[in-house]
Image 1 (cartoon, one colour):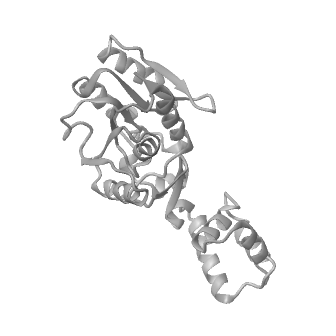
Image 2 (image 1 turned 135 degrees about the horizontal axis):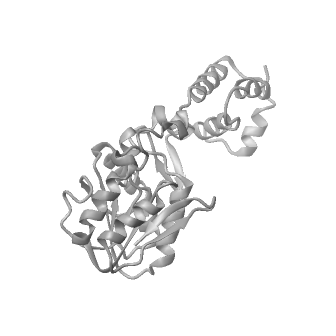
Image 3 (image 1 turned 120 degrees about the vertical axis):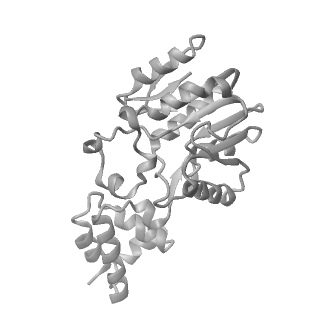
Length: 269
């Protein structure tokens, strides 16, 4: 059997037909041209077995990023596995907003719920003068974030903390993409997310608002005068999160911002 026939056969049941190509090319470090040339060749028994195994994992909703072991975020190739959430394109919009709002002069920044380190590392790459601290309640996630910092030669401070629990400093910028999905909202989620990504990075009590409540309650103690807060939110949560922070920060302007799809995605304070 030719490669092109094997790929066609095994891709037919996949939600994302190109996922098989993505995984094989990345596991075997093939260029697009090498992949296209491969299609004309006869597939070996060993290759067929491996390709079939990958297709089965994809059919079982395993994310291709976990199979290859990395995901791209803001031009960074980040290590990801089942210890951390796969960074989303919407979160790149959060990073871009922070960079647009704040120049390169020295600032102290806190990233709450850093996961793979995506936000903290993307900011560190663009703002060498910023002192960035990344915290997470998951020690396993912090291991991944440290690996990613080391891989990209970026210097950050990592702290194991449940929001502000182990934090003493004050910051110019506090950013968070916390768990914000309500426990009864799994019907809106892909099976790949439910089955493979860590629950602790996805779900929160109080209809998904629990971490925002913690941040709002204690952020005053950790924000410098004139400091700013940036939060990624679920698309239904804009008004509720806005009200939370307006209550705790009556002297600040709280805004809701839409993502490229026109959905509420960021609250800035």
